[in-house]
Length: 392
Image (cartoon, rainbow, N blue to C red; front, side, top):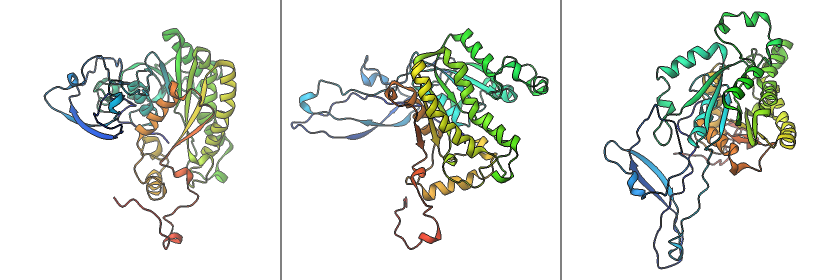
């Protein structure tokens, strides 16, 4: 399931001092206002941390303001001259290719924004039949509001590539697909051709994101799924990641990272998530472990997957029961709150950064803890138990 984000990853080291006659540490929270200016034509240079090269107050301006909550850190009086170290997610100088961005309402878009907010250059691969709509919407400013980054600038996409990750190369592509009118006007959209185009245009990448999934029979129970439907789900949703990594890893810099998106249906029964999609997600997670070994040993590239919770994306709405799954999560997850695409994007930025340099072969859950639950506590069977609830 995929969805959209509102703001990118920003871990700022706020260099502040709280003076005290005693050696005490006073965690506090400060609220300040500052002006954000959109700069559609300006490429993001650095939004991973607040610069200490000029006085902090110089960043304040007059005019329309927006409230921003900032967590500050206190230090002892004896150490007041030494700034506390920060752990910024700094991806400046890195280049990311995100496969599976077709609108501003999916996890792929959210990940792109978080990576951009950390300083990475963004390339995207868009499903060929959706390419024109996506490019036109971007050009006309339809996505400008959702492109806003934490510093007020707009996320820039260096290049959009047509991509159909179901096909590895032109030789494997059926003639009826090549001649399909939805593919007219586009060329070099197989995985091999896109990797070659990226190499020709940019030379190399550092981050590869797989945000692709499709099951033509997803609404059918597994027992009613055809062989073709089952294999199509695995081809588009899991083997496509193997293909992307196979063709892109030769142009990935050592120390690079890959991230895919999975779902809890890989290991739990989710009625309604059929058509072989649960099998495809299980395969994707298994492949993550094996590919982490192979890519790590041969290319020094890390491989992880994020198991994201339910979110109201366009792709998820196509399944037909996304609202029910969101309500179920709110009632039963340890954290009773809405899951935002930004939270998934921020996790991806962390996994792609040097801060996660020892993490590979992992399934990282970003679902408010729903994966940890063994039962649904909203069941009438538990009505007499004193179950903690968020009553806010």
